[in-house]
Length: 234
Image 1 (cartoon, helix red, strand yellow):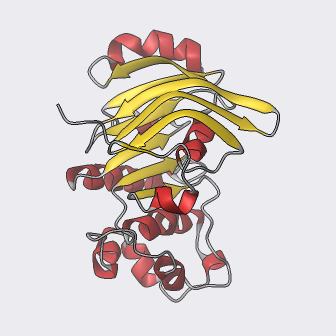
Image 2 (cartoon, rainbow, N blue to C red):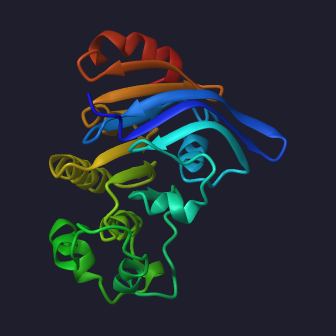
């Protein structure tokens, strides 16, 4: 049995004096899609930020393909092949869509070419010369994900990519996740939109008060719906 692509053990995290993560434990196998579920404030985004070293202080263990990263700087963590798409997207308003796309450095071989990206996201081809702020919310979200795919990252951390978007765009993003999974990408998603996340993930982790309190597979989902109603109010 090969080691997990991502393995998080007893992860504790702080923002200043605020202790926000209280012993997070989970793993993600290569090629797997895992969704972190939970109410706002449960610690899901803080977990993603901790994986990238973007939190004030963290202890415990975070291994990427067996490499311990808990003491690493963010730029070194990224070069292990991790791409983070934050909820705020981070599109540069003064740059065109294509300039935004080309901005991040190459992390590893095997990243998508611009042509492959435009095939996956035809809207971005049409808006290549449009200023970042002139893109719709859906186009900005597509661009934020596309920017990672060009770098060669194979582990994608996607934070609330469906939030605030029209159903037709959410459907396109679901198709994107399915396509990336078929191409062997490993994906960790934070999602409030359970209807979007439910059919996409192999496994689900429910977080509460800064720790994982439940874990179940796609096959176990129907039997867990009553408990999920309690945890999430879905």
